[in-house]
Amino acid sequence: MPAYPFLVEFLADACDTLKVEILDILLGFAICSMPDVPVTAANDLKWRNALHSAFVDDIAIYKELASSENGEIVDFAERIVSCLLSDKFEQFESRSDIFRETQPKRRRSFLKRLLRI
Figure 1 (tube, one colour):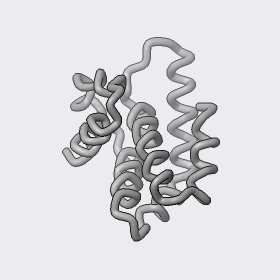
Figure 2: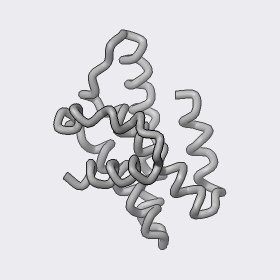
Figure 3: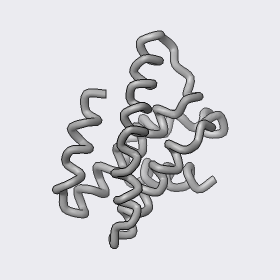
Figure 4: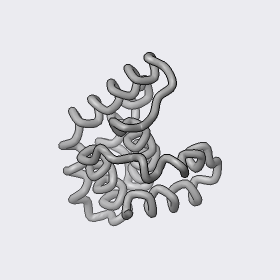
């Protein structure tokens, strides 16, 4: 949660290339903050709920970014909004290990496929 406000703050003034990278990270956060993501401890639940609430409070930011002229920004912003408006994660649960993937292109590709289902 501590990184979320920091990343969102940079979106306003970042160049498009940096916005895409920040939105990629934020998409992963948004997916992990979905209401039915399983948690293992009470602190995890509080953290997840706080993160999800922060995303919902900032949904206007992502809706505005979805009207960007940059297609990648639009793509990530639309997926974040879709994620925030959805409460279904169980179909993706079995693939959660991909979020630990260290290769950004593979992770980004998976996230794109994930949210198009």
